Length: 439
Ligand code: DOR
Image (cartoon, rainbow, N blue to C red):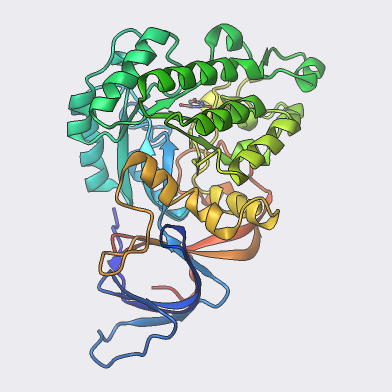
């Protein structure tokens, strides 16, 4: 795996956005031997600097802290035909991410130190970016007994979640929130009441009626969001709601935050970019859990992002092979890949006026970094650079055949996009460049 070269750059005239430090404006950025040395109005070139310093004019381009995706599925160990730590992190850096948090529904599941350590070791050997493992809430993802949170934390897990499945047992969820407090771990909730959603194939509404497909009501998510909020209020454990998709969930989380409940939330680009009308094509690329919802929900998600109810945008990158997707709708697996299409969709929120540029960048940098407690999300002087360069204007047609991901279950293939990732630096090393005259 090519880990990239340590960068020596003088970026000129960039639009620098660092919400963590309240920074937004035109600046030059100097990187020497991978270290971010200076951000300033005009940096004078010095004869002492290394000969191979590249001076690049970035007029109209953005430099932002390296992006963090707090919710991806890397499929390793166990389903390497869908994705590996190598291919998933290569997709991540091509999408502008310097780090990902990977969900534990692998084979075996990540419910112990051995699996967490394996993931971290593979990431060190073969990864293009940083990987933060998420451990399970329940042993074996079985929803019966708690995993060893202390062991998971000590071996490097940054959160716990049974993502892919809900914790149906309310007592277990209560104990998880209590136990996680001891280790300062956020508990990431996949909020779904299986009794309400079971055998559903898409959002319950007029489209599911027309198509004759069994529906999943909004309440399947909302009753579990409500339960988890009450449990977080009781226990004061740190709750994070994953992939929020409904208006009711946004409303419940907003109210809980006002009451001071220790809760944060994320949504994914599909829940503010697509609605359930996409299912009219029966294209299994649109089959995801939670399902694409109605247009009113999409508007509520945007509202929740705008007013800060939803703190973070994560992709829920869920690779599946043609084997699981090129089949009857009923039998197709849930999930879509997202790492290499997220940036233009997030920038769409800025063009629509839903978020300011700083707010949009915060949702993929300092906000998720704060939730996971990882030292990323800001442009720190003197440190190895973790940064992303974006062109917010460039338009192009998304072509999944160019993706680094092993899977192709992307619903945006062939769609016109605006906004492109030009360069990603991880710990000072250029791990991705799409710059025409780049290194
Ligand atoms: O669509 C989904 N796919 N939702 C999940 O919660 C799990 C994920 C997966 O692992 O494929």
